[in-house]
Every structure is written in structure tokens, then in C-alpha cells.
Amino acid sequence: MQATWLDTLLLRSKKQHFLSQEQRFASGIGYADLGDFLIRYQLVGEPGKPIIVFSPDPPNVIEHYADLIALLQPDFQVLIFEMPGFGFSLPTRTGFTFTLGEAVQLTSRFFDELHIQRAHLCFPCVTGFVATELARQRPDLVGKIIVVQTPSWEEQARWAKRIDFKGIMATPFLGQFFLQSRKRWIAKQWYRVALPRESTDDRFNTTSQNAFDQGACYCLASGLQGFFQHSAPPSAEPLFANALVVWGDRDRTHRHTDKATVPATFNASQVQHFDRAGHFPELEFPEQFAALLKASIL
Image (cartoon, rainbow, N blue to C red):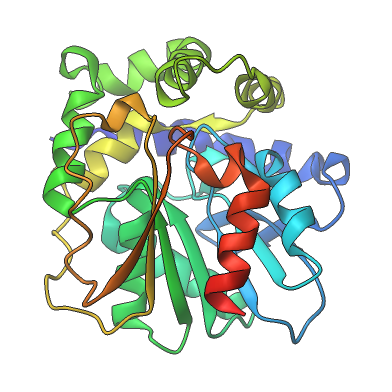
């Protein structure tokens, strides 16, 4: 049973509201209107430098990346964009079902809209599979792939079940209603378990709550249902991709995940562990992460 249309129906009315707020965003942040999708993005840095692309792991938004972008901007052109249904990006048609295939297609269209080629992709969690499938379908768009907290597809599906309390998120309609009525609480609880137990840093939650104040989306139930119930699994044919796999070892949501697994598409990969980081090593330790990217790419 498909229930993702419920979220897309509710989101369609947000387009003009989001566009009216564009002047309130930080420098370099704007929208790409693809007709059936409205994509919020930030593009900074000098054209001609290597370009690296990020997609926030919801409920994170572009604003969570300010420190990392500042560290990378001297050496890279940096693009960061929010997937439709999260942050301030929207699907504007009810037929969008949040599947892996759709995420790959809209990312390809977005890159073409901005004339992006040979970009290095740093995509976290489930969007790591968007990066690998995009590299398979459009190798002209992709250079190096960096995935964060992304095991094999099978391990990722097991992780999705573990983080779903009593299977509510995976249940059509119930998941959508529960998420939309409790998204602030869910985001706060997510940071509590995704960050190291000893963490007292409330900036992640504060930034997300501020985004919710402005109307930010958080269609987590539709995202999980679309990816793991309605998507065709990614191809297992190895990619000869220059891949880097990054793990934050104190992410309690992944404590039962087999971190030795990687997306099957990687023919060979380098694995880097951040032993003091949780689910967001690129944001928790931006200086070390920026140094890793420079060493791996430049």
C-alpha cells in the first residue's frame, strides 16, 4: 500500500511560502525549480576548483554544514542540496514516491540544471546509495564517492527496522500521521541516540528546530517506506569507483550494524573510522573531515 502521496499532497502548498523566504537564507543559498521539484541548495567557492557535493542527512539541513563549508571553500567549490521532502526542498507532484530510483533521477536532473560534472559526492546514510546508483547511470557526473554511515543494502534495511519504534514509520498512513504530528520530538530523540552518549552539544537539535520554525519538511516515514518497501535494490555489479567509506563509531543507531560491509557496488574502497564521532562525523569533527577530504581528493 502506498501512502507517500499523503506527504506530497500536504507539501504542495508550501512552494510559494518557501520561495518568499529565499531572501532570509545565507549567502549562496537559493532554489532550483525543476517543475515537479523545488530544490534548495547552496553553491560557494571559485568555479574551476574541484567540486564536492553534499546532501544533508535529515533532519539536518544546509545550515548544519556552515563550519565544514568554510573549511573546504578555499580548496573546493562546494554544493549542498536538500532532498525533496526534507528541509526546504519539495516534490510538487503527488506521484513522487520517495524511491531510490526517483532520488537518482532528480539528482541527475538537478546536476544538469546547474551544469555539474565530475563532482565528488559525499552522501550520508541511505543517500549513499543515491551516489552509487548515480555513478552507475551517469558516470560523467561523478568523480570520487564518499559515503558516511552506509553499509551494504541488506545491512541498511536491517538498520531501518531497528530505528523504527514498533514499526510505526514503516506502516503506511500511520507513519505519515505520526511523523508529521511529532516531528520536533522525533528529531530531538534522533539526535539523542545518533550522537555519542556523552555529547552535550545541542546545536544539531537547535538548528533543526529553528528550521521547523520556518516550515522545514521532515518526511521520514515516506522516505523509509519509499526506499525500503517500494525501491528496487541497487545493482550488485561492482563499480570501479574511487570510493571512501566513513564511519562514526559512537553512533548507537549502528551499534548492531556490520561495519565491515560496504555497498556492493564498490569494487575497492578505503575505510576511515572516526572513533569519537556519532552518526554525523563530517559535522561533529569538521576539521578532521575536511583534512580527510583534501588528502583523498586533491
